[in-house]
Length: 107
Image (tube, rainbow, N blue to C red; front, side, top):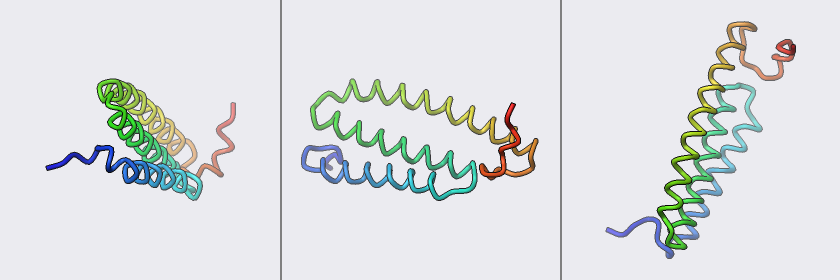
């Protein structure tokens, strides 16, 4: 069984990473829901991780890429935790999670 991350599959991997990234960006741009914005951010970051992994396997330095991905996953977990906390707080105060209606949260 051959690996998906080979130099022969590099274009496919980059294409998949680019598609994931732009699907996440589209989700963030088209959404009027904070949960969907957070999901779009996650999909975009997973596309970036896939691109890093493909590039690392192409140059043959997979250990460095794995270390970077572990750091990215750790930071991403913190971002999601803080984001969900803020979304829950906004929902409890305002009763909705529409980002256009949350202008009263200033100050």
